[in-house]
Length: 449
Image (tube, rainbow, N blue to C red; front, top):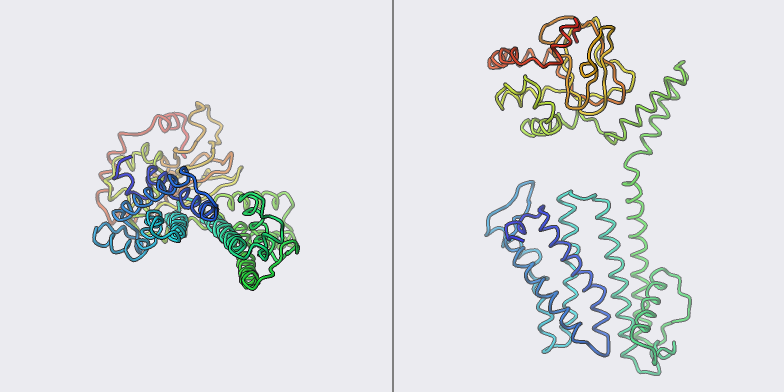
């Protein structure tokens, strides 16, 4: 595992390292309070905390060299990286990891290791910013971890109160748990914490001493806040899970009622519903045209190049064009979706479009005898170039056999580019010698699309 890979926050090696930090923080958050209150500490437990502290200090060294993202830019200056880390996580990392080595001098320093739990929130927040995983899932994980961690720490505090009160007055004595194991006592303290936070309070473990009453009041107050916070987050989670689909359903239902009232047949309404559901499933209510238009020109061409990578490799227009001209051509493309049975290109119309398929299956409708490979068009293939460049009227149609997603190049935009960039003339001349075998078959059969 090279250091260079670890410094890249999106690399598989760094993700594995971050998962290790989540495991370290989780073990600290949930197991350390149990060990701190245990009457005896084994050598294995001591070795575990030493190991986790060493891992934490190694992570601090990595953080000191890791570029970070600020306002959409990656900051690689070593000085600024160090300053950023100093102002954010340095204090908690050093205190949390050096707390292990200070236990021999100050027994209470073991509690400082709980700061290591912050590693979990740091990693989850970073992943959410990188948007490599569902933000909703990460928010649920972060909230669940915080809730469980708070519950566990309250349980540890309640057990500490029971262990440090006078034996005959403590809740442990009243519950008859003096002779039980440490694990049983801890389990009962977790039980009390959960029932109190949830405002259930069965009454089998109740506060009697002043310290227990104060602790119970604080825990009940925390429970009210946590409950309100939980309700708010659950509502937000449900809204995000719905992702606007309820509004979409209401809008589509209203549109279908209007169309039905104005005489549209149930068969057509059914086709419309299926098309709307498909479009929603592909775009989640987002307009692809709007998304691409709002991107900067350089990113537009990059995104379209990746979407149409296979098509571009086989299109002479893009093969012969210089990179800058190719990018300008790509920006002119317009995304479109066609339902099954829809004509993509109609016969007896001027050839003003070239269609590049990215998803689905389309087929040529003609009475001429043509080989099968010239009739069907699949993702990565294109058609309409014959009539487009020959400036002829199409004599055959192309129909969508399944849902077809495509990008359209229109003549008016193409002609404008032709006037602006003289290099396009040379590209068209170079294309003339590179006609595909499919186009040759179509021309021999007298088909122009």
